[in-house]
Length: 169
Image 1 (cartoon, rainbow, N blue to C red):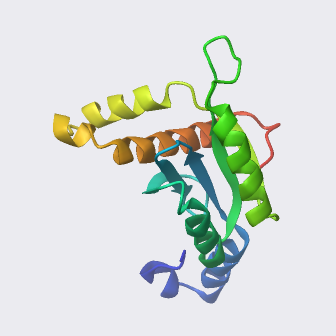
Image 2: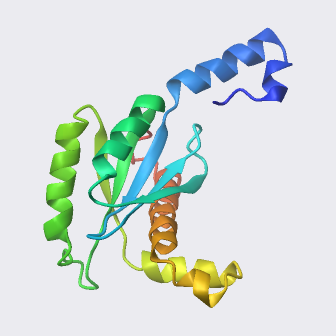
Image 3: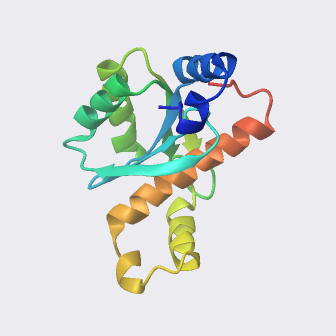
């Protein structure tokens, strides 16, 4: 996982340190929940970089997550919390709360946290435009959901790094 060609050819101390990091630091997953599609993003093992992982259907999300946490060390899951402009929960919370409850039952040892996801879809579209994607590619809703999950995760990482009171994973 973490050990690269360069690490393998370094001193035993560096290999030991790399192995230690590999075994102690887990990834963080982020979920952008939707009734039709669920965008999923993940950090690297050092929890520095957020990357889009997959977009899955609500029917397969629990199997996907279960399989992922069985093969990778995951410290926590961040779920986008849809809020209205006035700060109140958005209507879609009626779907997200049961999803999170079921997720907690499926993976009971996993820490699950919420983070405000206002404007993630808008930011995802802007990122796609700034990235030079053609209009047809920008209409790919699965890609939008994956990018939205990445934005949720990147927001969490930035808040964690800028706020020493937030627990480190």
